[in-house]
Image (cartoon, rainbow, N blue to C red):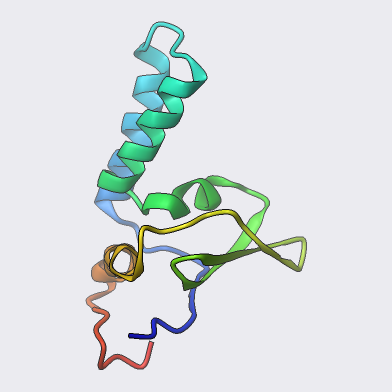
Length: 117
């Protein structure tokens, strides 16, 4: 199964993603000085459940203008017009598909093996 290249420029207004951002912000305000490890763990779990998984930190980075996923181990970003490989990794192709589905579902689209991608 080949996933092809997926490019994320702008994301639909997704209720789950908004809830992730709100929850993350609330946790940072109400947790009594959470340590960086605790917040990193919280961010990873919340992003996986409510947002766009391992792509979330890239999407929150204002210097990133484009995110390209070429497979579970190949994620690139564009910064200042330059393409840069990241250290972001997915657990496998199924994990990539779940995140893609989460991104495109609000658009009434779905990704399957018969899709042109």
